[in-house]
Figure (cartoon, one colour):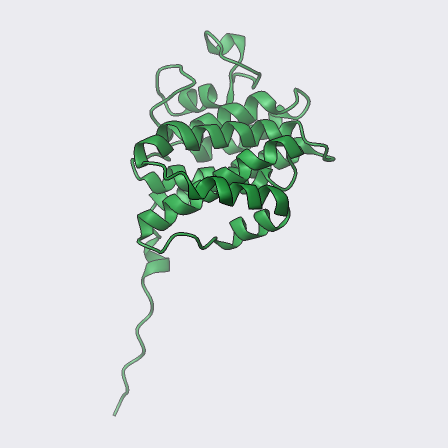
Length: 216
């Protein structure tokens, strides 16, 4: 079995990054961009892999099987991942990264509101909590965001990937006690988010027991 390490690898004998190991387990051609995983989720996994310390990277192995098969074209996946990353990083990232992360939170919230047919401008619980912890950055981000309306294509191609990258690097370089644990937690939460979006609820969860008929 290949051992997790940073960067790309020519073959399993030279090691593997998170997504190369996923391609191996999925039976795909050896690649760090396998078809079995949503591109943005795969990008997050590669970034977490490369920004986790060598001593702790092996702890990510248990998450690899759970990322296989999580893919789809729904823009909610991109927006949900972007929001998860930005809200996780915003409270811990250095001050110089906070404005960009706060803008990412607002962009993801706006995109989700648009996709769900909700009125823009109202933050969800995670977004609200994250923004409350950085009031100055949040104020400037709201001023900036009022002047910019991102397109669906622009969000998927630029805003969401930038938010993911900025978030992971911001966490890795943050002055916190255990950034490796935060990065692993972020990836685990992101996998759970995408699983909820792409996998239908189980039959047992969807079917409710009907009330027993009265007997006469």
